[in-house]
Length: 361
Image: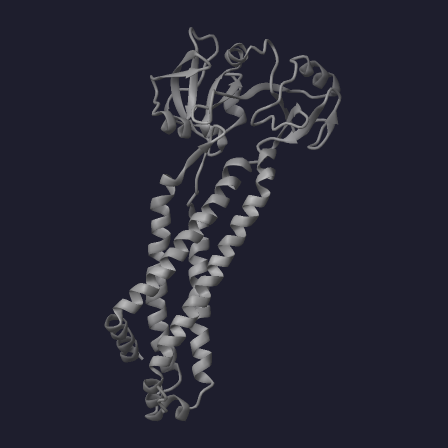
């Protein structure tokens, strides 16, 4: 069977123009499928990071992202209700346009690192009682404005010294994190906050509605993403349609290649070669074509993905090409290989030797 495989590969070289055309088609399909899947993945990664904590925020807002403002006295109400530890935070968006909009996160410098697994890329964390205004910025915001530790970021007309750059893996990577008091002064909120982070083992559960127009939500699961449901559904459907189209085109193309060799297959069977010789011949060609094309398409998506990032409403979105996305791309390639190979094999196996050796073109 090794000789049959060698003949198949030689035939690939002899028909290289046709094989390149088919390979480009498969590679482009895998590229688009991977990028679209990467966009869907980015929403899950950045906006669906539910944590084992709850937040109390203003109802009918995306308070953990922006829009919520509640009085500091809510902390006393939560304490009276049995909440043992309510940690205040400020979440807001500042800027004059979409191009300079920035997420502001005001936190308690002594406690915020215990709430989120911040990873410092450079510099240090925030400290209480510092002279001057300080901030740490997420990696996405740092790339967007070319910032680093030791630089200065301007927020609502005030300068903040960047003392660190962090990575969290969520939309907060687009934020400037500042001490809570600085955020309140910057926004002119006095003692008001956006939300309180509370434990899950307290008197409340996600979905509870509290007096004063407040609601309890799961921390990290930003409701804003629900509005993107139709877009995500369209992207998911597009991924599936592209994959189905690739399977159909490859099945037709391999069937045509097999039909061009039908006389050769018939002669092989006449001289005693088993049916698996046909399987080896077509399988070798399909395997080389699909594997190389899938690898090229997935690698291209991984290289192109970072250049497709765009900033909207202070958040940079772009395809996330991680192991799960690349794994699904490999799965799509295997589906193309299996289905596209089975179609010509089944079609040829249903024809007798006489039908194969008879030329009618």
